[in-house]
Length: 178
Image (cartoon, rainbow, N blue to C red):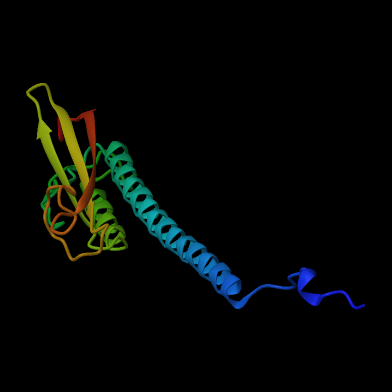
């Protein structure tokens, strides 16, 4: 007598098509998550690069101001030089790059550097106290979100405001021709 075939359990072999489709769906969702993570990482890295450049540019001009105490480094919001001493008499000839003309060169180079940032702008303000102590405030602006923003509220609203970084610098100013 033959054993009855219905009594034997069939052993399952391989995957069903439904299991394969579910595995592909889970894998594709995971890969989409990794792609989104990569995009966020690249955007964050680019923003960090812009912040590093802005910090470097602000430090650069503050170092130039410290190195050239006889110059006056003041710009307006459009990067136009508003005050550079023109009548300062040099004590030595040839000049040692501390003349007021050097301030104009420094500001020109700084403004050119700012153009490497998206929407890059700079501003330097100066106040001089009665005891001849100058306080400079160096501000670097850039469009971090690349939205075409032009506001000066330093990123309060990224759609309309530029991101900014500010550095104060306080130094004892020499009195020209004294």
